[in-house]
Amino acid sequence: MSNTDIRVVPGPANYYSHPGAFARLNELYSDEALSRAVWVFGERAIAAATPFLPAAFNAPGAKHLLFKGHCSESDVAQLAADAGTDRAVVIGIGGGALLDSAKALARKLGVPVVAMPTIAATCAAWTPLSVWYNDAGQALGYEIFNDANHLVLVEPQILLEAPAEYLLAGIGDTLAKWYEAVVLAPSPQDLPLTVRLGLDAALTIRDVLLDHSEAALADQQRGVLTQAFRDVVDAIIAGGGMVGGLGERFTRIAAAHAVHNGLTVLPQTDRFLHGTKVAYGILVQSALLGQDEVLAQLIAAYQRFHLPTTLAQLEVDINDRDALDRVIAHTLRPVESIHYLPVTLTADRLRAAFEKVETAGRPA
Picture 1 (spheres, rainbow, N blue to C red):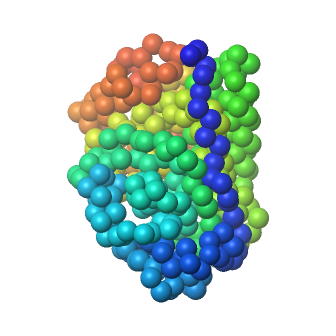
Picture 2 (cartoon, rainbow, N blue to C red):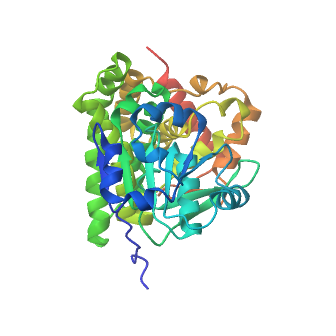
């Protein structure tokens, strides 16, 4: 195998994203199969989804499991025990951790999975992978499954009514697809065509997000379902997942995600969503690479969208030497993806990048 041999995992077997999409469930599953469905959902997710659920939710024989755990071996095993035998399909309603748990459960039961996202913070509905956690909620790693998610149903009205912070996090996480991929695939002409397709998609998605996120967030605030809002939602859920699936390791994660991981050592950053911290990480990566134009462009965009452009906005004091040292040490661990960057990395160099972002990112 050459070092350019990759596994291409394009996406789900079926994807519907439009008002009334949940009704498509009955087109792909018989009444008999839906009577043997196991529905898995979070508390807030089911409250948001209830007005849009098809009658199949109440099919006689269907199981309903309220899930409050992690995507951990023990929690998924408990879901499997509660689901019982003779199930025909797993239907997950919720955000990333819930959908990851539903995906893992479906593979454990040997049945197809339907994903109904209630927030647009990640591409979890699209990707046939789950991030595994231990029971304390610490990420252990991810598993890519051997089959696609069978059906993804996106009801944009639910996402319109969700808290804006989730959409903002999705925008941040999905912007990283382009900025990290260009680091991972600096010579795309030497890589498989699917990687180049992934890069083209990442660039298109970046442009959609930079051009339309401000309008989409304003439309969400007004409660008006527009094309801009739907485009941003599809960029996050479908586009984000597609990029990683087409290019595999050449279109996944680099420094932005490593900076996110470093920030997680400080408890005050816990309340900020994954994608919000990744968005900040793109700024640090740009500073590390000396990409002043990119840094300025992103800071201007972030200030319009209200994504963080300084550590202060993540409740971290850049002058707290001990705290910053801990973030830097974790970010530079040998296992972190920041080491894909084509620069010599030192703690001082990374500290200088944080300081550069802090200065450039301060509101005028």
